[in-house]
Image 1: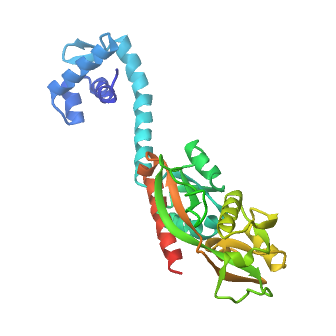
Image 2: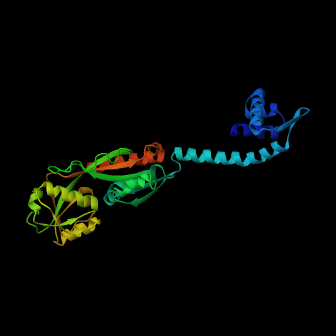
Length: 309
């Protein structure tokens, strides 16, 4: 195998005409130059230099190798500089996927901080709910996924909803997002300090994304009833709009409510308390990439600020 360091020595010998002059140019000893040239000729399987008096001249093979060495070493230098830029956060990219309420609350703060601190790092964003976002991470379609999962439902027979699904990933907990009830302003429970889920048993419901919808059913069944879902939409503003129009009640994460201008809607605390864990996910190897690690850190800071509001 031809090594880059040997090619550098060959170019120096070809340019200076002698081992001693090449050694001075490279800042090493003449025996070191001679040794490396012998190693290169062994790798090439043919002589590369011919001694003529006090100078060296290239053989045909040596001439060919010097000609290719220029491009090889230039490409290697460019690669080293690019890698160094990525490692030093002067360049690089992060492909982020997030669920919508995370995109509108945590992500903007984190990305603004990244742009200010590391303007050479490019970050792209697409939206997807888990489990699709987690599939994208495992399939190599993103580097970092903002996701959530619900814990076990009290009194439900199903047990923990999501245990073990992320065992192969690096899981960075960000915050615990409590779900709140939404009722129209004129509703009998508007203004109540707390509302038991069973008190909403006879209400029409507006449900959210498929994972949230499934969890809503589990929570309601744990409270002793099956919800009558009249409308289902992945769009949080649509959920709020439907509740505000008096078409039903809903439960939404606080992050989602924070990201929507809620008109004609009252929020109430629900019992039993329902929470989801918001996390950032990546692959173990990607977690060591400087740009990914820096983005993770900024998401953690954004989550910490959100938790204190």
